[in-house]
Length: 128
Image (cartoon, rainbow, N blue to C red):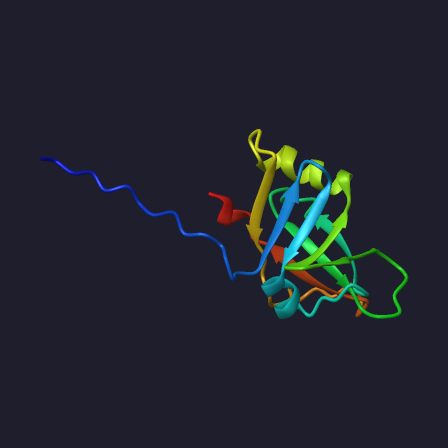
């Protein structure tokens, strides 16, 4: 007998993830929301590096900054509807899938948009 073992795919349960769905829904796991410090009052935007289009970021605005989109509370995290963001992301990375879950960094990048926001990398390399 010549056995070939099938690798067990590790789930991202309990990890900080962001889910993009073709329906336009963006969901952040409870772990991501807690570790990044997001609440339903937090306003965010998504951004892509103009020079490196594979580098995507979640921009978390500080309270009082009039920009971005707020979340809705969900049992296992936070969500919002933004079909233009989800379609742009899925068109670039999904290869025909209806949804895509990606790890997200929990430590902000150095750039803070002049103190108006914190920027967190969406770890698109985790898709490979």
